[in-house]
Amino acid sequence: MKIYLDMDGVIADFFTGLETHFNVKHWKEIPKTEQSILGLKGTDFFYSLYPFATSKRLVEATRKIAGDDYGILSSPLRGDRDNSAYHKRRWLTQYKFLPNIDNLLFSGQKEHYATDKIDGKPNILVDDKPSNIDRWIKKGGIGIRYQANEDNVDDLITKLSELYKKT
Image (cartoon, rainbow, N blue to C red; front, side):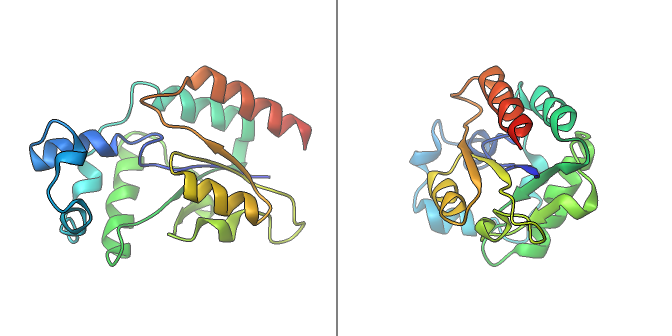
């Protein structure tokens, strides 16, 4: 069993980054939000993000719980996979959150990794986006919705530890 952490909203402060980049008080004030975000293609936006105050604790705890089975599973910007992945990897390296390379995944179809390809056991995904969690669970994985700026990291760490021990 692997434990995958999403980046944006879980360990990387994506929404504050958007607010800063577009000079707005709240990301929902960004005009034509979807189109504006797609305008980030080809930039180093993901490298410019800050971690949450809880990110280091979450990553360290996940490494302690899962060992070599700690991973990152993050969606790249649509139409900008290679560039997004490059800058996300730079970011993970900078903050010392980079997992073993085999467990570093960039995909908009996270549900493909919901179960182990060899033994079929469920993997765990921690993600802030409900639709990602829903698709993950439908494919047999264990999904935990967590948004770093709203949820308690200690509760998440306890839950991860309990789930990992059960398998």
